[in-house]
Amino acid sequence: MHVGYVAHALLLVLILGTANSVDAAVVETRRSSSSCQPFESSFLASDLSRYDDTSFRVVSPPGSVVTSSRGLELYLEKPRGLVHTKDGVNDVVAEGATVNSTFTMLYGKVTIEITAPTVPGVVTAAVMISDDIDHDEIDVELLGGDPSHWQSNIFMTSPHDQQPLWGVFGEIEDYTKRGTVDETHRYTVDWNANRIVWSVDETEMRTLRREDTRINGTLHYPSHPARIQLGIWDASNPAGTSEWAKGPIDWTSAPHRMSAAFKSLKIECPY
Ligand SMILES: *[C@@H]1O[C@H](CO)[C@@H](O)[C@H](O)[C@H]1NC(C)=O
Ligand SMILES: *[C@@H]1O[C@H](CO)[C@@H](O)[C@H](O)[C@H]1NC(C)=O
Image (cartoon, rainbow, N blue to C red):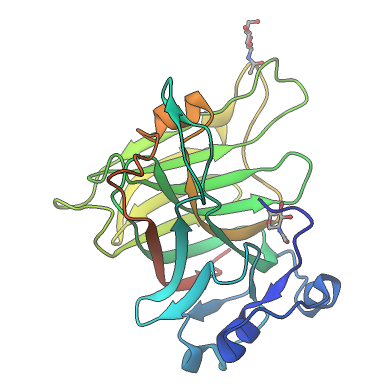
């Protein structure tokens, strides 16, 4: 995450081919609802005009996100200079790319079409994350190192936790038939006050009930307004993350520029 990085309006990026800075506060006020608003985009320039053009913004460096016939393309590029690999980690990680929604939603059904690279150590993610101090997270993660599965996860901290709960709620999911992360699949997170259902290509794969998130008497169920965050990142460091992602990235064989494509995004509001 590039805290303090200037916000960029996606539409400006598209039209001008360059990222102009905008006042994040202005963008924020355009759409500040904390509940669910229906939304649909295929991220093509011609399509964006039908929607609020400030619904999403690029928060990574200019050039890290483009629109193409593949949709919204997020790039991960090899870091400049030498990358040393030792003890299962790289000493330098690539910057990656991140797009944030400027709106938040509390409950709703989000469906995203994603195509991800199959390079070990690369993670492509569609995340719903709250600005709240608890940083509730609901995740769909595609690991280049495990291309025939995808992962569902939630994360939330509670003041009562004696240790962080990374990985505790993570689960490895199948595709309906044989499938791989580099094919385009539709991932759905259907989130209400009582349960989260993850689906792929309209087939339910996992249901996590509110009650399932109780640890040592405390619930860890995401229940704060969340932003949609799309990203591709280099999981080559630290060691635990790299191990999970089957990294680190081997830059001697990996393409020096990889991309994840988000072809469409739809929000439905049944709750
Ligand atoms: C993007 O969203 C995340 C999660 O809410 C937030 O922490 C981050 O500050 C946002 N970045 C920008 C530049 O708005
Ligand atoms: C739950 O309780 C056990 C035993 O006291 C403790 O070891 C563990 O760290 C606790 N878990 C969390 C997330 O606080």
